[in-house]
Image 1 (cartoon, rainbow, N blue to C red):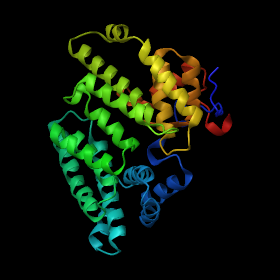
Image 2: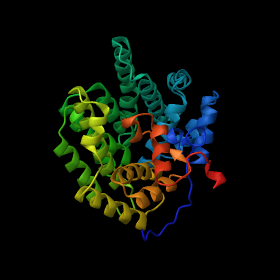
Image 3: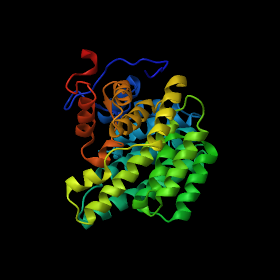
Image 4: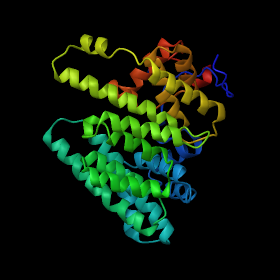
Amino acid sequence: MWGFRRTPGRHGGGAGAALVSAALGTDPVLRAGCASVAEGEPGAGLTLLAETRGDAEARVYRAEALGRAAADDPGAVAALARSGSGDGEERADVLLWLGYALLAGAVRRSGGSAEADRKGVAAALEEARGPFEAAARLDPDDAAPWAGLQTVAMGLGADRADKDRLWAETTARAPHLFAAHMTRVRSLASTRGGSTEEMFATAGAAADSAPEGSPLPAVLALAHAEHLRAEERRLSEEGKSDFIVRMALGRLHGEPVQELFELARAWAGAADPHVRDVQAHHLFGWAFHRAGLTDAARWHLAAADGYVCDLPWSFFGDARAQAARAMADVGLDPSRPPDAL
């Protein structure tokens, strides 16, 4: 039916332990490096980052994962930064890593409602800004620290001029950087002071201008998720019951779904391996599940190969539970690990 060139195996994830978080990457080498970092061996992280110089996609992807691995104890990375050892490139690697470690720590602290929690998150985000700016000065051609600064600005609720400046700096260095486009779309959501129209226009432009085989068109599915989340929040704040909210929002349908379908099909038919493939599969899988396109949703969720991404599932509840429920809905067994299928 789909006519996709690639045919993924029927790999579901588990509702519990069988689903593997993609937060530490989906590449075995990167995951092993993150495990070493978590065990107090930062040298593995430096080696992995050194390999990405000149490759913005891989650099941001690895820096994010290594940052999460060091989020509980960023002191080891900070100690490397303070030591002053290594050449300029290595120092840029360390500072980039420290920025993402502090950023990951801030994200883990977010979600709390207490004023002290909010202040703590803001302080952590401000702390991450310094290493990113220092890394950018050491390597002016590197888009990765600018992508990190984009996220910091979004988290702090920066004004539009600052967001635009950081977006321009990032895309001047890496026009099709997946993480940067994800952050840009989210920054333009109505819940962050933007507008639905501009958010969709930006996501649509990214999809239209994406290189052939790039997963970047999936950012349009992210825009739909942000829009539905904003509508859910608006209706809930108006006092509508959960049932009324679900009935009012319903499914994705009509021309927007057809557009997503065509984008997903074109991507899958010409896709080159990309570090963000699993993220794109989850974005498209969520959209097609929401639209009631069972075959399309099944294909994409199976192609995620047992990994789960927070976005967009976490917009609507616990990410693992939401993804597992969708997988079960489309006929994937959410209790069996990938190697059992």
